[in-house]
Length: 240
Image 1: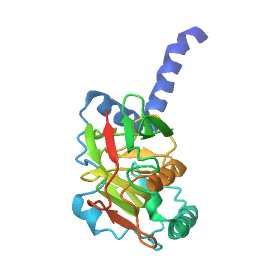
Image 2: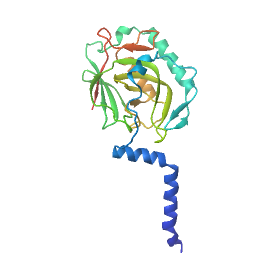
Image 3: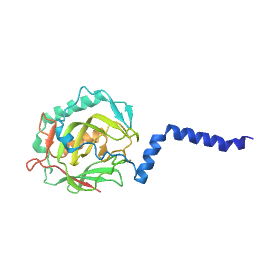
């Protein structure tokens, strides 16, 4: 008698699982089939990037990811922000830039297949860590240069209908390399090594903070933004 109930019990278990994981399953399926329907491409428009002063928003109290309110580590982010400002103010900015002391070019490699970022000085690997690239919108491939940096940035987008809506204040250490696409820290997930973004390159918080200071353009002491120029060039970024 019991063995006859097993198929029914399995069916009930499957229905329960799908019910509680519907949005997650849906997001995975539409990504695999490349039919997400999510209109968001990148985290921000160019105007939003340039309109940000890069400062930490003390008034922000809530963060939303995948249409759900998440634990927002405001205190730790604010502390890291203040520490970064203090460190930057004490640094000699001439140490930073697009080359190291030996004149070897700094450049960043993003491997979408491996979901890893590597930072190089010439042929010497100086940093490597897992990332999360585009899930609902692809991360653009090609050779770019960081054109703008902000210490903090509000990012909004996604779709309420698809369960991909996000409203994330104080995203830290943003390095925009193509339009509104950036390498930046991510506090809303810890699933690095797997695609999770709308096209940006999500990075662990500590790794993003480290490479932000390493890469050009240099953010002047006491400031929160830097725009690449001939005198303050942006580090090359190769996405493949």
